[in-house]
Length: 462
Image (tube, rainbow, N blue to C red):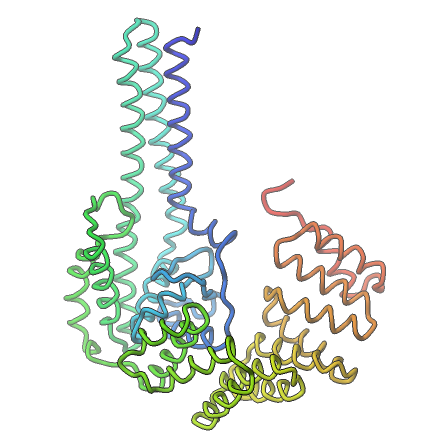
């Protein structure tokens, strides 16, 4: 027979486990999500744009040389978050925001978290919340023991309630701490915007949109159940500060606004289709961003000849836009015209800021020609591109193909190992690294890199 004490202890043990799991999820769900299952988007144009948004903000926060990266996440929701030294921004946030200033405000807020060291402090708060939960659970177990000894079932129920109440107190304490840090990040964001001569109006627009979305959804929530301040509270707290700024009425430069709209058009075309493009640009259906999206849709779903004609019109309208040349290269590869595609990528590289992604595209086009001299150039271009973008997994596949066509099996095996390694397939990476070592000169830089992969220990495993 199971005793009352055993029942109470088992139940309280489950409660305690749930408390600890919930606390870990509350603090670390975003970083874990970022590391394991975030659908990352790589695009040279959008990354360059977001880097231009972030540069002045990072400098204002004193973080310009600290190696902070901004990563694009393929998700339609309006969201951004920080994990480690990376700021993750959903493509949905870019698509929804009508002005650069709105996204710049989002970036400024996330930089406020980084500059304030909020992630490190949050770990301390987690430890405190765990302690509160453990104490509450132990008190509950103590009450359960007393009940079992005295055959008082009501007291056992009180013990469970005591543990559950303690877990709720711990959770609310942690949420309250997070709300405080969110408010601090908001104020820091306003300060960074002021230092860089930019308006905080975009932040207000974002919070007003959030409040409107909650109202439309019929959401009636307890503010103590949320880790962020409620939208109407954020608006009230920040509106006076934002409107007091001498930069309140300052608008984004027209050139930057156009780049923003072109990025939105690209996101809409690649992720949501023509109907989404029409909705986003309903006020300007004949503008360049709409035509850009139409060219992309034709490339994706139409025939290459029609797509090429549209891209040529784009280039005629903006000959110095590197990403129109990049799109032309993609269309020409699809049309099986790799030499011309390589020329288009070459033009894009000359016009754009340094980009490993464009170099990988150029190398892919050179590789597709199948001509030995161009394949040799492809290997060189791919190596350079992957030096800039070592985590761009697809590039290693092209590099392995290039070395394979050149008959250099050792480097081809090593490139395959690198691709598996950066994709997190460590077992396969070690297999190919071992095969590469058998064909590489012992002690060479390539051999040493293969050895590094072989000796790598996956985090969390012994």
